[in-house]
Image (tube, rainbow, N blue to C red; front, side, top):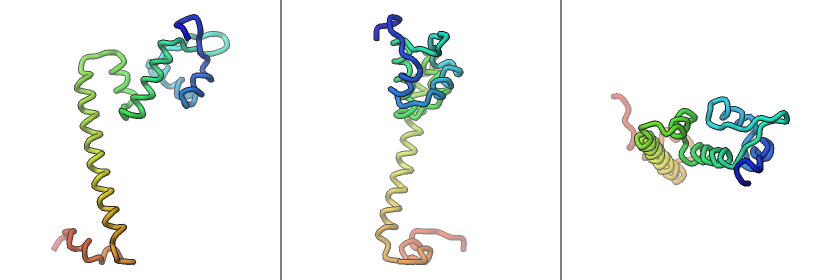
Length: 130
C-alpha cells in the first residue's frame, strides 16, 4: 500500500490485526487513529496502518493503557519517565509472578493430601497472631 493511493477498509484492517472493528472505532473516538471517511465507511492509509500496528504492540507487549498510548503518540514531554514507570510496574509484576510460581511449586510437592492448612512446612513458614 502506498500512502493515499490505496486505502484499506475497516473490515480488512480489523481482520489483518486480529481486532474487532469496535476497537478501531474506540481508538478513533479517543483520538488515537484517524481514518479517512467515505460514504461506504472508514478507510486507513499506510500511516494509520502503522499507527494501528504500533498501538496494538504497545497494548500487548508494553501493557500500556489508552491514556499512556495517547501521551506517547502526541510526543508530549515525559515519554522516558512514562516508559520507566511502566517498566517498574512490569518488573514488580514479574517478581509477584515468580513468587507465585515458587509457592505453587512447593504446594505441588507437598506430601499432605488434605488439610493443607495443617501442613507442617506451611505452618513453619507462616506467622499467626499469638
